[in-house]
Length: 162
Image 1 (spheres, one colour):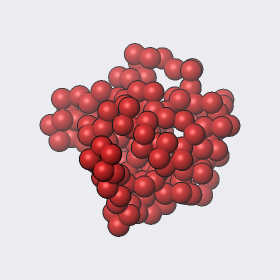
Image 2 (cartoon, one colour; image 1 turned 120 degrees about the vertical axis):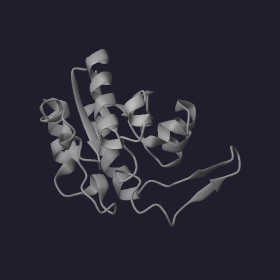
Image 3 (cartoon, rainbow, N blue to C red; image 1 turned 30 degrees about the vertical axis):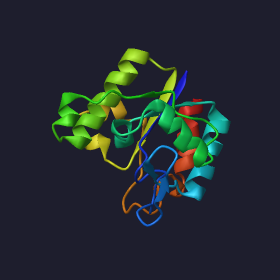
């Protein structure tokens, strides 16, 4: 199994604050993913066969079924199969360190063949640098480019296909 462990804000939901859409069918505000970021994500999914695991804060607000709806609504060819589980560390406000810890726990439990974590938070600066060294893609800020940043797509595909 190949896992693409994905954050959303700053990765594929970039520049979204002015583009909200209220979906009356289930009473939630949806934030459209960037169309070019979706194109990059879809190409990664097609070339690697990876499954999506969400580490995004969105997992605290939406169920996996709702995330399936959001991904399809945004034109992503695959939907998430699981969430990382929020740790107490994360819930106590240690966003960056908590996210890194949760991803590490998920990978250690599920033992994927290959995996890559993509986030706008710098997970390498959390005390888990050795763990993330060859499996982390940092979408640097500002939140306008995300996964579209030059060269990231090829790096992600290479990690997942090696």
